[in-house]
Structure formats: C-alpha cells, structure tokens
Image 1 (tube, rainbow, N blue to C red):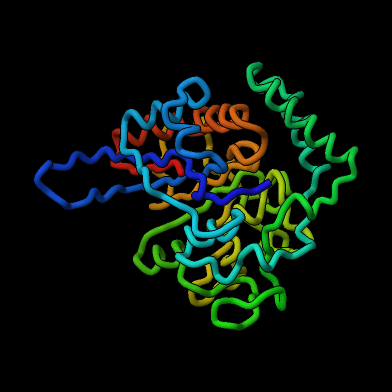
Image 2 (cartoon, rainbow, N blue to C red):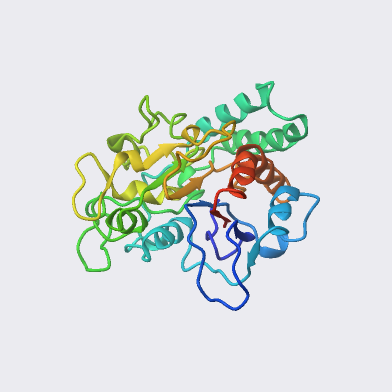
Length: 314
C-alpha cells in the first residue's frame, strides 16, 4: 500500500511573493511557510499532466520546480521521519509491528460517507466508487491486513534506535518543530482525519494517548505512519519534545478562510490516505489529490501571493 514518500517524487513546487534581484544570493525570508505532503507519484506522473493534475500544474507554472528530491528508505514512515527530523530515528521496514493493522472497515465507512455526501463533486464519485470496490473486495477475500502495510510503529522493545537503545515515544531528538521553537518561531502540523479517528479533542488538538497507542494506530484515513510530528508530542514535553497543540486536525486550517495571518511560521499539511494520492490507481488517485488541493488550498495560495509566503507541494 505504501511507497517511499520521495523515492517516487511528486512535483515539488514553491514560490514566494518576495522578489529577488538577479545579482543577489540572499534568500527570501517569508512570514509563513506551508508544506503539503502528497504520495506515490513519479515526477512524470504529475508534471505536465494537466488533464489529471491541472491545479498542481497551474501552481508549477507560477513558481519553482524542484527536480532532484529523493526518498531515503522504504516504506513511507522513515521518509516522513527523515523529512521532519533529519533521521529515520531507527524506524525502517525491518522492524514492523504486527499490531499496526489496516482498518479496512474504517476505510469502507469513510468512502461510503464521501459517496453519499451531496457536496462531493460528481466527477469524483467514480474514483471513490472504484476505491470502495477495492476495499470491499479485500474484505470479502479475507486479506490479512498485516500483509497490506509494513510500516513500523515505535514502541518500547519493538526495535532499537540508532544509539542502540529501545525506541520509546515520545522521541526527544531535534526536529523541525523543536528547532523552530528554540529560534522563537512557531510550528503546527495539520493532519486530515484526526477527528474522524477519534484522536482529536474539541479544539482539534491531538490526543497523545490515543494517537500514539500501538494497538490502534489508524493506518487508513488518518495514518500514524504519515504523521511524523506525533512521534514527538507529549502532554508534558521536555527537551526536544513538542506540545500536543502542534499536531492538529486539518479542520483547523479552514478552506473557506481568506485571512491566514493566524497561521504559524511553518505549517506541515498531511492529507488523509485517499486525498494524498496514496490510495487508488493512477490517474484516479492523481485527480483525487489534485482536486483536494484545489478545494482546500486555493484561498491560501491567493492570499499568499500578496503576503510574503512560501509554500511547497512534495
């Protein structure tokens, strides 16, 4: 189910509203940086495919295109950890936890709900229906969910970290969030599906005990393996650990907003496993992810052009 995050790289796009003189090497200093993580598509499957990824290609035409980004491991989780902290923290495909099961029933219910939702665009219905057929087929065949995912889940005694000690959550190593905090800047990771998985409180903040429970990691819809910051959150953070408000449900990044000045200095956006292009076949998954980006990020992109912002699709 899961390929390396950047081994098959999606088009990475960034642009800032700061104009640079041609004779200077001084980088821009944007007020806000937003990074959106999508999955499982090679460069050639996005860039230039205006039929299935028109929105992302429209953003490419207005900015910079990064062409040399690569994964460091397989499957997804170590790449997310490396992106967030510069290390996979000892998490790799060789230390999968068999309790990390794929909740096909949850995914089935999610798809049925999306199909029944009158706000779902008509053009997206065949995509969702095809994905639902795949899920129902897997359920009918009695597929062992452990065969569908090989991502590790950090827990005491599950495997050794890079220093040889057993991994325990939360991690306490340097990471994007802690570095920003120490520099006097702010960070939030917005994850789609926290609320659906029952892993967010009334404010949309992650519930630490729920989100980091190895027996219930929510590997579809919301997926722990695609949620790197959760591995550092704590109710009582120390050192490089992060306060739990730094992991929030994506509903706190509202699509209808026209003023995004409330955003932290750096935002990391993680769509769920359907909308991030992870699930489903190409080009249907491409269309799903592209439409999600247009629906949820168009207002931010319009605002960013006049507010000294930097954003990246990766």
